[in-house]
Image 1 (cartoon, rainbow, N blue to C red):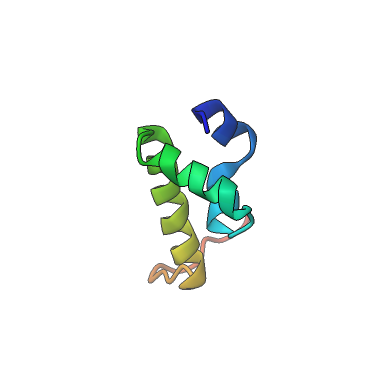
Image 2 (image 1 turned 90 degrees about the horizontal axis):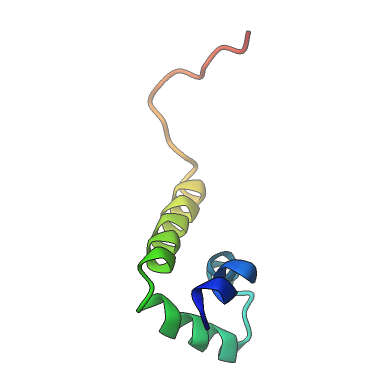
Amino acid sequence: MTHSDAVRTLAVERYLLDEMPEIERFAFEEHYFDCVVCADDLRAAATLREAVKGGLVNDRAPAKVV
């Protein structure tokens, strides 16, 4: 898989959602170990997913809507 293929097919998102066939998942895994951009995107998306699962706990008061 090339970087262009990964971007075009939304590989990061589909990988995290477990929506890839096994052969494509293996190809993406091989790619992101060599691609800094995809590896960074994958880490950021995984962090965001975990934050959402955790309820985005925030100690600040909610912002007022004007």
